[in-house]
Image 1 (cartoon, one colour):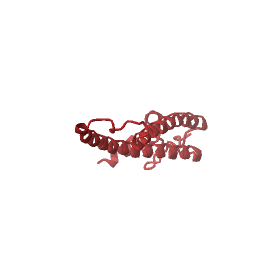
Image 2: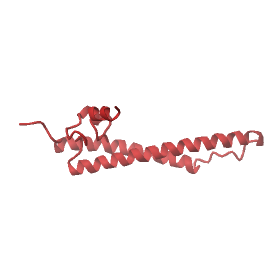
Image 3: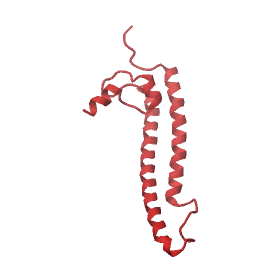
Image 4: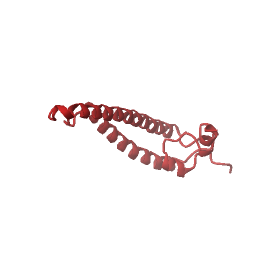
Length: 126
């Protein structure tokens, strides 16, 4: 018997559970960031004195920019996790897109949306 070319259905199911847990958490985090951006938490600068209002608005703008960047990054992460679920359905999950070999389980447990093995990833950065 040669080298394994794909993970078994039971192994894929284990990864599906890991991904679904991370996806739930990522969506909750995204919703929090979105609420921050839309200012639905009710924190506003309208009740502060005029002297500090300018400083607070500047800090709020910076905070919203940071939250916007975090929200974008979080949405990218969510899409990567959703793409990983599609690969599980297609039974191509865990296969390095450069080498065609299986990505080690340890890497997939740490980075469940990975599409490259460590070797391929390191080869990219050179």
